[in-house]
Length: 123
Image 1: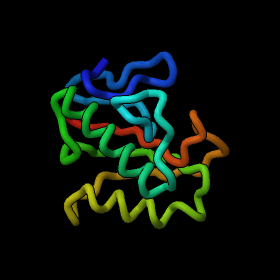
Image 2: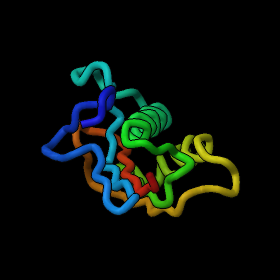
Image 3: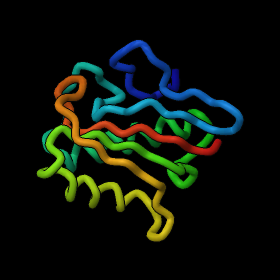
Image 4: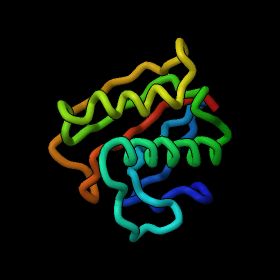
């Protein structure tokens, strides 16, 4: 467990380290201070919360967003939410230093979330 990170919604670790790599479990837009709080409204607010949760997990594992090499983004409303999610995503990374990424449309996510993101990063 990573101190300060949201409680996982299922039985898994926030992050697993192997040979200098960090495999970060998909983070949800949950409030790290209140598991029972409602999720933020809309994909923009939810994406911000997810990335902030990822930053907490990365920091707890000795890394940061600038060490991310790959991400997977899951969206429940792909056509509607792809562009606004991308705007938020870009705001967290230096231009020209974006990680590789796959974005997938899914039929549902835990707690009715609109977005979930997992990462691969260097420690």
